[in-house]
Image (cartoon, rainbow, N blue to C red):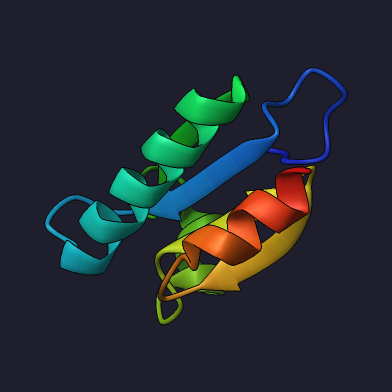
Length: 84
């Protein structure tokens, strides 16, 4: 997966099943992107050995417009500002 592709959604969440912080991040991302009409996608690091190697200790990791935005938690106000 490349998060810098031109057709990529504005927000990408990297996580894994069973991760409670990922569940929290997903709720914030769903709320903000829905309100702003912004696209987003979620990918499991378990599906990609390279993502697993790079981000196993940082999930959830969020990217905005192809750049790493935050890890462990998603601050709603900070995400809104990044998407403004």
